Image 1 (cartoon, rainbow, N blue to C red):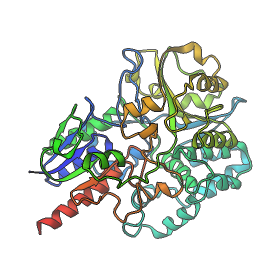
Image 2 (tube, one colour):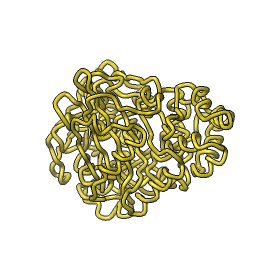
Image 3 (spheres, rainbow, N blue to C red):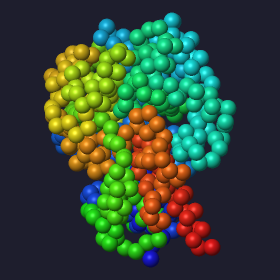
Length: 470
């Protein structure tokens, strides 16, 4: 009998499997697709030689993950590449706010009226990422924080809506940039906790950066699988699990799936009937004949470019997606990895992607409104398009079954749902069945390619199995 079977070879499933294998347990992973990776894959979606990340692509919490940092993933091919600027936030007049490695450069991009306010906002937390990552990338009620003072100070700011945090600033640049950071929660900016999302992304840039893996996000998954195999683990692909009887006997079954898929496969009935899935995204991957012709010079140096530009437009876009309305003027999160990674495209060519927020399960076509928005800040962009791969919510869900209705967070992150996932429980990785566990990003700390949900699930499994041997 195996010690553990992991269902799903996404970053969290592979992290859980690798950590259990490193503790000497026998582990096998079963993945429904013909490739591993889940939300961290790389494919030729458009033309030969153009390597795209169909799901996650830029990884501020990946390079800053305590779980990944504790593993020798560089031995298995993972190399982080950093752009000059983690992120740029352009405006129609050709200027831009920037999220730079330097706090000072970031602050000065907001203008003299708001530079001091930004410095004061981040000052208590700069240089403390490692401790904060341990304290916040976890289930908040499992143990005392490493740094209670910083934890409390951050909590007082982080629990606020971005719309309230932005009252500290007078200009459109600071407000727009912070609204864009908060928008990564895929929830209205008026919701509690969106300031925490914005501030964590800003601090990640100042401490670790917003890098991409050389060769694409697949490199993260391949490195985790390499580490797993080095410790005796086995990975099976092209193996769809429809019920537990499909799997070999094991002392623990660890699901890197949506909660609803776990309940269906494991026969737990309505255990997760109250899980709410949030808005989806409409994503376009591009093969380009040249770099994006941004009017803001800062955007040419940035790995990620947010297209809003104002906090009002960003908030309206998120509200529309949350309340089921078609996108009109979408807020876009875009990335241009081939600027720093020449392996992503043929020489002289480039890859680029953009996504905006749309309602869960939306079946419309937002290509026109997305490209119209890009053209506002990069006139002539359409002339460079060699090919595009378009994915709305149905296609997003088809790429990754964990993204129910196209929800790339695997469960709403609005308000307390970012902390209480997938439902209120002291140990959210456990289920009603003592041998069945959940390790996907549907559990705390939630969305992102950081492996922390898999890390804490593995610790839970290890403790339970060790206790049963006594």
